[in-house]
Image (cartoon, rainbow over all chains, first blue to last red):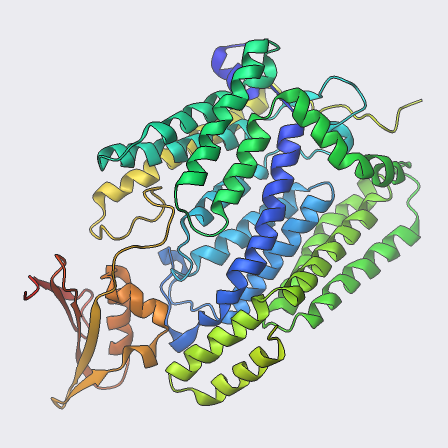
Length: 375
Length: 150
């Protein structure tokens, strides 16, 4: 194998793509609901909008559109983190998330672009079950995962540009440059059993953690990047042990249930899955934010599309678990919104803005809702 | 009997798949290198999207903005920006983000009988006073920059 081929297609510990994908998707869901939804009221105000790209033309996204996209993206992302991910669902998450921020300059948070790049990589990640990534063997399962290597290289390019712009502006640039180099070699660590590599990698991982601790950044970006650095740079043995502990319930309980011949297509599974898909968006009725019901209903349609093929091609319990993961996503959205200030912040900011613009009727309606959800 | 605890890892890609993946990888990386470089050719230096120049929000202070329009019958009307658009857009306009200024001026031109729209940003720093004037029907506003009066 040529060095470049070995770099991209060589083995990595499967624990890493498994955990990175689930970590980012889970964070993305809660980030969307807790940090983006409260700002939804400003969308569509005055019928004015400028999108990131001209492709949107004169389209003015309103609050229901924006919140609907966030609900759709978050619920689908979390459902993919909860159960074995599916490429079509991940592609829909990537599209939904990217449409969510590109439709307006009101969302100009720089790391949302990076998340879109990551989601693009995730579509090509190996779709691993907990069993595939953390089997009983003492040796961590390894396999080719070029999209994971691309994920690491994407991160390295980001740090490279941080260093380059820093150098151009006469600022210190060695730390982001070390981060860039570290991510370039990180994916090779699982191919070497040399103790030197295993010892050196965690030290290299300190660089991105330190960079995100000392540099002021927006929102949850440092949490994303520190979490990713931990998953990418932890020694193979440790990440395998930690992953086994985290996925123990999934491997011993959920996965055992999925055994069964694909030819024994029980009709009950079909009907249970269908009921689950209908029941899941019903939960969103309690969220009381515009567009969320539509967003959750669309996740159910997306999941039906994913399950549709699986009803005939995969072990018989898998569709049911997919419906359950969607239900879990919708439930998590409701609990998150109900137990946080997201809903209150949305209505309060909407009321303040409507009042500023002299739209006192809307302001009164929004204020009434804000008072209802004041904590 | 097959163990319920183990599952084989995904197979290694075939040479054909490796070639296809290689094309995707090459394109994806090339784009990621080129997109930040577009900053060097951007007319609006305040626009540093997709460049990784900054991970925090804009630190540039917002200028004092006023806007007015002239109707066909020669009347001049002041525009209350905060009543027309969301305050986040007003901040964009106040930071001289050209694409938002253009869109705002074009939007005001959509009203009946408007001849010209003018927007002035008084920044009080080295950005000076910036005047944007759009003759309705025109594609792009004319920008005038003056040094701030000390």
